[in-house]
Length: 328
Image (cartoon, rainbow, N blue to C red; front, top):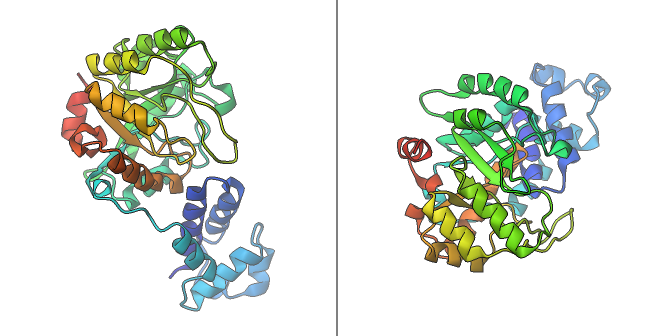
């Protein structure tokens, strides 16, 4: 295999681990540094060592790949992160929630698109954060308009990048972006990122107002909980789930099944309740790096275990049907 392919695959698998942002970025930087080098130049150890960022691990990967072997570190990661298999996974056609380095993602739009293509996606929605989430470099209206100009360049006959946003649900249920600008986007994922411990009745009103606004397509990670990971744990928000899911069903807003293992959101009991209320679902990766797009493998396995019918998951739909639904 080519050294650059080995380095990029290692970065992708480390991103899937989620606790290795800096390690994965280091391997991507080395891949970029050697992109224009010939095999003969890569075999010049002294010259290679002088290049910034090439340490013992990446040096060894390059030489093992040049020797015709799968680098040992890559083989270890492949074993560790072998994808979960499910019948549902084969039916997924895309992903409606991902982030680029325009907000708090680690890589460019192009790298996210390349990773989506490599997974066999037909479409991917670019949903960077909205302005209130300053810690995530949320997009102002001006920056979002600039991003909208970039989106068409990533589309062709076999792949579509959908314009979108993960918009904050404000305390009163309003959405954190200009209404006319939201109307220009293909996909609006509405999520709560602040005051997660709000009193139950107030949180219920907040969520119901957001999904009843006529502006949202997907209700993102509805409870906001964290069950594991480097950020620690966080209890779910409390609200009248039946009322919220009834509003989702009435206003044709899909409930997100967030595939990130540290979230497992919604919990299984709430998925069952949303099913009973007649909701649609969007199975999404919430990826912040190219390798994290592969987390839909785990999300699909979980959705299958909880009995969600594939036809109720909008990310199994072909693009034409999805577009018709989004434009409702």
